[in-house]
Amino acid sequence: MKNNQKNLEKYADLALTKGVNLQKGQGLIINAPLEASDLVRIIAAKAYGKGAKNVHVEWNDEMLSYMKLKNAPMDVLTNFPKWKAEGLEEMVKDGYSLLTIYGPDPDLMKDVDSERIAATNKASAQALTTYRDYVMNDKVSWNIIAFPQVAWAKKVFPNRPEKMAVDKLWDQIFKITRVDQDDPVEAWNKHNETLRQAREFLNKKQYRKLHYKAPGTDLTVDLPEGHIWHGGSTKTNDGIEFNPNIPTEEVFTMPHKYGVNGKVTSTKPLNHGGSLIEDFTLIFENGKVVDYKAEAGEDTLRHLLETDEAAKRLGEVALVPHESPISKSGHIFFNTLYDENASCHLALGKAYPTNIEGGSNMSKEEMDKNGVNDSLVHVDFMMGSEDLQIQGELADGTTEPLFIDGSWAIDFK
Image 1: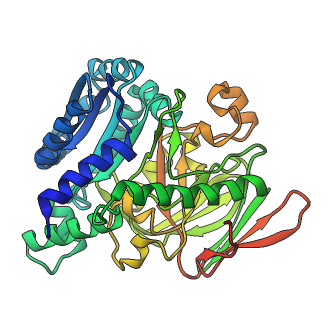
Image 2: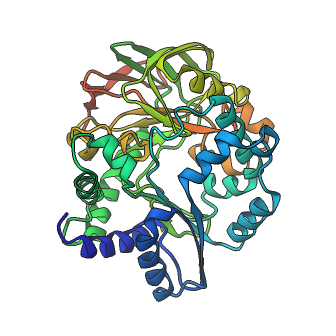
């Protein structure tokens, strides 16, 4: 890996400037694995240099999580600590930004009962409802970046020794996030402008529905009236611009929760809760999954769909051209942050309220009336490929190609 320290410094700068866009006097929460301690210290030093009032780090250790999931009584797994939820709520209510450093072992939890993982995820989601509301409504700035832990690197590059695999994955991360360029911030300014043009084109079109066709997929997705496409940078309620994901190649909106019909087949593995779900198909009727199958991880998929009633419905539709930098890398990353930005994808569960006019101020009844899905989960899965065709249907019933052979069929510039 070339210029490791220099690139780490640039990576940290990017996370703080184009990522959370940390402001002077603001606090910062960092969620990170223990293995990322060197990167966390670089970020913390730079955050204080920008005038952060406090940097709070939530460390996590995957092996300890594995031990707990494998051995703890179920009543422990189903009770998320109240003090922890209240502490996180207190910080986001005080305007703290949130930075997550992510890179889990895709196979670590494969021998853990999927029911125990599902129970833990559900307890966490229930306890952190208010905290997640601040994030999903962009009340605070937030960002996710990746860190190549050894097990993840070996999954992506299984034929390389550990150090070479980690170095190779760092090289990919730096290239895909544009950190290897002379001025990553300026590169992201240009990239955000490209995504802005795409979302503005789609917002003007206001397609009534999208029709997806590919091998194993024939799906119609209704879009609610007043839907809003987002992509690239966005703004908090206070007008602070930030990028939720680094990398990101998508533009996305919400589907109508009752308007999804047909079949969709995944094109990349889904890492959910430390278990892989592979080669799965979902059948939708009136927005709801009524049948499913998976070649691997079907129990995990079942528990995901059974989290709550709304987990069986979609909360996001996202468009990513097949020639995105991540797709062109030729690698499957077994990591949703990366794989979702190589492929058009959908998400089961909760919709982002910001994807519809007035969504952040809607009551639960108003959300349902307007087709906005509300769930404890939000899980992206990849279904795009070079064979994907998408037709957009306009308000007058006419249709036009939106994607041909996995890429944009129109020039939105």
